[in-house]
Image 1 (spheres, rainbow, N blue to C red):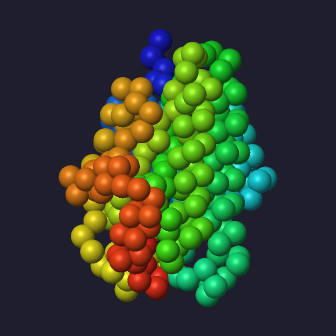
Image 2: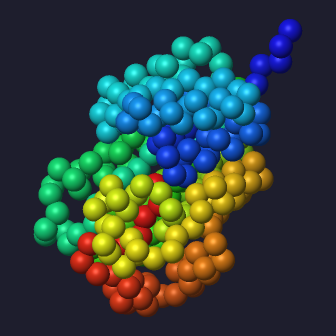
Length: 267
């Protein structure tokens, strides 16, 4: 009998941190069900990940929509296999002053970053609880630790995810389930282009390697850590500053860095 590999699911897996999470989970011996909105890029990613010698099922779905999130998880359940690892990584941002950005863009951030993560966490963790075993990685951001001038809704969404992950950690502390928050800084992904932030200060600065971020995130996940500020030494230092500075100092430092349409992003 051929041994069955453990199963992992990754959302937002067509590029960036999500792709690296999926690729590296494959390298660690996991079969995968991966998701993204872009059909072609998702299937290209799946083909690359299969070279690691694992099974990869690609499920295109727009997780902003309730029925699409349900369809994605129905595909996961249809495998008939328990989910050992869930990396809830899908996210989007939008740069600009709150009074200037479109309402539909801001609500898209809430729907994808917040609603879809809560939705899938509810489904995944309840299933994991049946066997009292499983790990969940939630992609937050160091942006969760400060108010986000010119990306108010994005930073707020990441603050929600950080609080959400910490609450789940407390609720599940006496179980076989674990939740880890992955907190990247600016990372070399499609985030800034999709957020219309290519011409901003942060959009043009050097960024962290998504492979490094993913590796550190997975190491923290399997070590059972509650959170990890992932990326370069500079990002880790920024995470430490955000942790120890008073709120007013954080806000002042962020305003000094921020420009109209600028900000911090990771997905």
